[in-house]
Image (cartoon, rainbow, N blue to C red):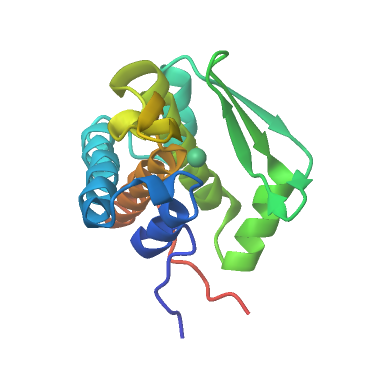
Length: 192
Ligand SMILES: [Zn+2]
């Protein structure tokens, strides 16, 4: 029997990403839910807006990236640094997305996704980072905390990097939901 599951970071695991941010402790505990929701909802809102412009076909994310002048460069390699496997990276200044095919293949096989669906999801996440850099502004800057505190004095302000990841995950989540409704994603086969 096929089980419904979504192996990409969901809302709960995105909260954990925020909690692991080195600046997390600088957010007052009672403000955390609102800070998180604001970032998450930014991703959902942008996904709704974006999806209404999409041509619903197999390579809809690759096409959307090309239409925005983003170059997708694919490498036939895996990319593992320490304990982390990178599938993709977005080089904001150059507007280039690097795709590591072997890494995506491993992820797809582990999670019972087709390569095409995995790529569309991963590109959706990176596309959101493109929106942040070139259209809507960085979600990491939605909440600023002092960079350094010495006694009573705060020096500088910095954003919270994990908020960008929270929003990009929300974006990919919503694209998956909307795409599934349009038959753009195959139901995942349960991974063994
Ligand atoms: Zn990201």
